[in-house]
Image (cartoon, rainbow, N blue to C red):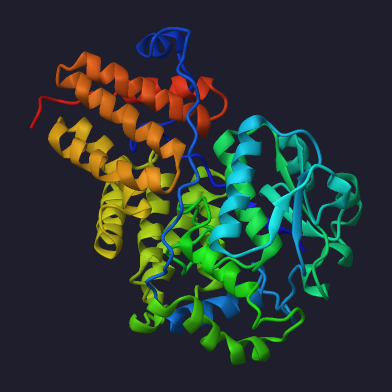
Length: 458
C-alpha cells in the first residue's frame, strides 16, 4: 500500500479574492525592482525544542494508532523498521536546494531522533531511494498524490508494474530493507522539502496520519510541513532499543510507557487530553472538500458536512477550527461573508488553543489581516501580521512568509512609507521564490494583494 499525501486546493493570497491570471506581471516586477528579482531565500536547520510538552498517556495511544494502522484504516500486524545504519540516495541528480534540504533533514534525524542515517551517492546500495519525475507523470499513476513512499521497490517503472499487488503492501512486510520515495521535480523548493520530510518520516517509521495530532506532520491538515519535535520523538521511540522489529501491538504497548518516560520525562507532568479518534466520515468530507476533484458546490457541501460532523462529535480542539478554516477556503468565491465569518471563527479557536504564535493561528491570521486591510484597519492588520511572522519562520513556511510580508508591504505603502514597503516586498519575493512555482504566480499574488481597496484608516 502506498502512503499518499493529498493535494489540497491552493489557497489564494488573501481571504476574499479569487485567484486570477495576471493582467500585467511587469507591474509586480517593477514593484520589487524590475527584472532583477532578489535571490531565493532558504531556511537553516535550526534545532527544534528537545522536549514535547504533551502527556505521555496521549502519546502512548497516538504511537500505537500511528504504528499499527494505515491511513485507509487497514491494520498492520507488526511493527517494522530498518536495522543497522540507514542510507539515503537520490536516483537522479537533485536541484542544489533539494540536496541542501535533504542534508539538513538527515542532520536533524541524527541529532534529534538519534538515528544512524546518512546520505550516499550510489542509489543502488541505498536503503531509501528518492526518484523524481514530472508532476503530470506522477499523477497519471497516483492522481491524488503529491508524493509517494512505497516499500520493496527499486524504480518508478517497477512501481508502475506492481502498484496494485502485494509487493507494495506495507502490511505484508516482515522488516524494512528498501523503500522508494517518488516526487515531482517541477514543484517549488518548499514542496520538494515538504515531500522529503513527510515521506522520509513514513519510510522510516509510522505509516498512518492522525488528524487529532496538533503538532505533527503525521497529520494531513498541512499546517506543519517539516518534522516537529513531536515527530522526532516518535521516530526516536520507534528506533529505541526497547522496540524490536516484528513486535505486535500488545508487545509494543507493554514496553512503551517506560520508553516514553525515559525519552520524554516532561510528558509525565502533563495531564492527558484524551482527544477522541477522528471519525472516518469527517476525514472523507475534508478530503472531498479540499481535494483536487469535484465541483465548487460539491466541495462546499462536503465542507458543510465536515463542520456538522465536528460539532456533533464534540470536537472542541483544532479539528473544529480546521473545519471552519476548510469551509472558508472553499466558500471564498461563492459566499464571501460566510468565508470571512468562518476565518474569524477558525482564528478564535486556534488562538484560544495555541496562542498567537502558532502556525495554525498564523494561517488564519493571514486571512484576518486581509479583511482588516479591506476595512482600512491598518493597525489591526499589522498586529495580525507581526504576531504571525515568527510562527511562519519557526514552521519554515516560505509561502506563508511571502504572503505575510507582501501584505505588510501593502499596509506600509498605505501608511506612506514607500522605502520600507519596497524592502518588505523584496523580502517577500525572495521567500516566494522558495515557496511558489511557477514564478509568474508570485507576480499574480502580489497583484492580487495590491488590488485590495481599503477605505480610510480606522
